[in-house]
Image (cartoon, rainbow, N blue to C red):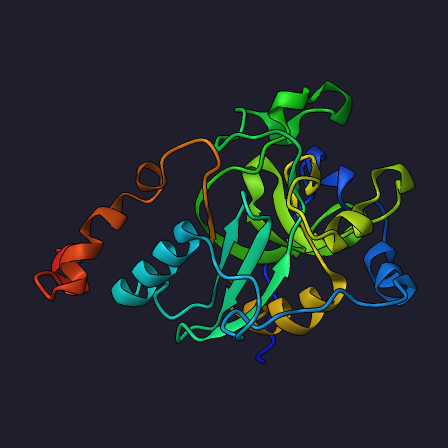
Length: 243
């Protein structure tokens, strides 16, 4: 596993991230306080939960087209509440459960990243779908998170369990995806997976995060999927598509 961290300019996090990361040292303390780390599965390990059809299609398209360039990437399946991690060469590097925005929906409400938390309505707590260039940066409490979409205040970071009533760790450990919607839009992952798997790959130059839709059609979010059959048959090549 490779490790990279974004060493760019420090920024003051938008307000919505404050619900996810609260104070300096919170994430480090959490990593030590969780008695047993969530098991991390290799995406291609026999016997593990298979990728959904949508996740498999996106993974195949990225591998065939080289859409990730020379960067590692993540595919997040909101419907399955799963994350699939790949290195820059497209090799599977791990799989983990995720917590996502409490509301279904594939778009972020304009201006939601700068709203007071108390003014964010339930329907605005979405995890937007799409292709994002993600890099590490600072959030509330000077904590470092993987910013997926800074302007809408969507970040990927270790699960924070400050509010016991939310039962976030228990939701991650449950066998169903039905209870994995709990955040304001951020993506929560097991602390050990974040530290040992995601950070090594994304630290230096960041990477691409592909978030699958839960309400829109997959091809509306990733239009280039429509040319995948032509790539498979050799009728088109990635170079031809770029032209």
